[in-house]
Amino acid sequence: MHILGMNSGTSVDGIDMALCEFQPDPGEQGTLLLHLLAYKEQPYPAELCQQILHLCHEKTCRLDELTELNFAIGDAFGTAAAGFLLEQKLAAREVDLIASHGQTIYHLVEAGRRLSTLQLGEPSVIAYQTGVTTIADFRVADMAAGGQGAPLSSLFDALLSSRASATRALQNIGGIGNVTFLPAGTGPDAASAFDTGPGNVLIDYGARHFSHGALAYDRDGELARAGEVDAELLANALAHAYFRQSPPKTTGRELFGDAFASEIITRGERRQLRPADIMATLTAITAQSIASAYQQFGPAQIDEVLISGGGAYNPTLMEMLQAALPASKVVRFAEPGLPAEAKEAVLFALLAHETIHGHPANLPRCTGASQAVVLGKVVPGANYQALTQFICTQQNYPLVQRLRLRT
Ligand SMILES: Nc1ncnc2c1ncn2[C@@H]1O[C@H](COP(=O)(O)OP(=O)(O)O)[C@@H](O)[C@H]1O
Ligand SMILES: [Mg+2]
Image (cartoon, rainbow, N blue to C red; front, side, top):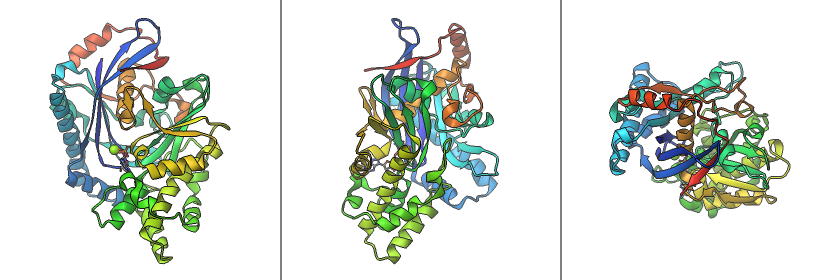
């Protein structure tokens, strides 16, 4: 099957697209071969990005605006997908499915409230514009089953990256950070996962603040590199209750958004810290919160920490992480055939592949759901009949035991 995975994370920097080919390994029952054919990040239209960030910050909006935004994001995804397929010289009929995570607008995991989440990007618009059946909204089925709806990367991580001889932590650093722990010699059943807290959100906010909007992020960690971490400011931020809360746990801009970042900056400015010192401290908050999460909730010995997401391209952050985790080897996630920045879009393609075959793809140990469930909502596109006929020929498709990358 050819599946186009799409997502936009909490950084709201752009739409990630990964065109994947999946086929069962003829020589090994239960092994699924994954070939990443092409990857692209399509920047969001600037106005749409502003609208989304504004909405996440204000947390209030008019219903007509919210309704329209759902379709506008769907349009942006549909246009990006159609353009990407054109670039790849692929006709819509050559693609079986689109997997769209959409854009997270709100993730509600407050005590005393109904666990719920809202991802926008109307899949009907994507399916209509591309002609390709679209599976979207992967979090909600897990939440219906009492889970946090996240992280959803654990199955993918376990199938691809478990190793017999090394205990690994698969850490994604997008806007928010999330980890999957894979004890040596185990599979999906032994994986554990949760959101570690801020990924790049605080750093991005600081870069925007100190550059008066000229920088969207601290490119190559240069601003932070020129500064010194302030111990008091760091300790103050790390005192946040989220960091001590036991998993399962997930978070988002609701806790670690503009308000949290701006409070840290204001404190730092009051104490006359230089912008570079504050940037270094914001970067250290991410690094230290990850290290502290591992120490509290991870396996006793972690041999390798594999970093994916945009944070893997911030060398200052990577060095701070390595310093905070001296007993582990901290490296950028790099499987031959799968670059660090493409991993999230690829994993949504895997989730859609599992959904269309009727296989559950959440790991209840990781999300806290009461059971494993089939994820997503299927929105028919022009290829729907052909797709269902094809799927009927795939009866009793075996459960995936491992993923192997083809290059
Ligand atoms: N060269 C770089 N230097 C520093 N930070 C980077 C670099 N490239 C990407 N990033 C960071 O990665 C973020 C985007 O990461 P991404 O994985 O796309 O997050 P999300 O999944 O939330 O969209 C950017 O906002 C930025 O903070
Ligand atoms: Mg992104």
